[in-house]
Image (cartoon, rainbow, N blue to C red; front, side):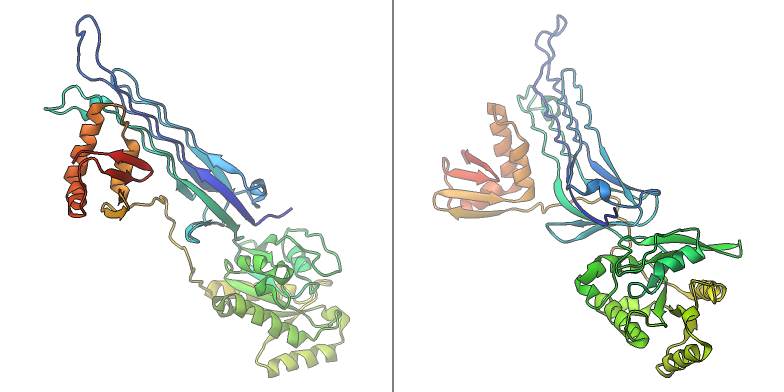
Length: 422
């Protein structure tokens, strides 16, 4: 089974909590703070690996979760970092964020690696809150949850040459003929539901990779016959071999087939129409020389140069290989979309905030202020004093006062409701 699309969920590990602890031994029975920080949560990492060819392992929308960080300890011991979770995918995997629709990364080379979601930060222990005026703080922080995303994986096979054409024109047979690939060949529409790749040798000196693209019929760009899924693979190629059944055994017109397939390419992506095409007319072993010449002239009258071949008796195959090779030497493809590999993807929120009012409740929103409240363990008087101090320095109280806030009013920051004295 060939799976070239999949949806997964990735979640970073939670950060470990910081702790409140004080030195206590016979030499220092009432020593200073020594509570350590929690370890950060592990991240979910994706790496492209050669040798993998499908996304079958992800067919059931699996969830990948990295390890949690450990809590801090006495003697300023930092908690261990959570273990990363590694996901291996085929080269050519594109990763999109389902929520935003943004393309995050294109893993186009073996070894390409990206952090999909980061683990949460570990909380600080009370040793980290010590200052000249706060020498025995009873303050610590919770570890934060790791990032979580639902991601869409799309596999685009990477090949130099894409072989396109209607079903039954001989694409799979051509792959078997010009390379070491031996595709299963049958004589009915859609016999190929898996793109076949083959390595083509050119005089023992050069090689190129060819792939036959199944499912191309009228309406393919809109999903008919699975064509839109397979058209993605064409985007990676540098040269197209456009195969036509000159014998017209399926009852279709060869020239109309040529125009229909090109119309599907253009409807899917204008860039595909800029790819060099080598036009080949297959099954000429079933035609006489006069019929072949008549077809050649008909295509020429429409500005199309066609190379007659027969996969069955190998007529024109050597000429085809050399023509494709010369086209590859001259071809360059400007990659569209997410060309640069972004090794780290992380959202960086705004440091500002805003204040709104909902009846008797004042609401403060902002990345930094919500993070502050979410992390602080508010089980001690010291922690409340520290929170008030930080809010004052951030300018939150100044803005609250401007909006009519008074001591004892209810304040909501993120998911936490507080009653603070200004």
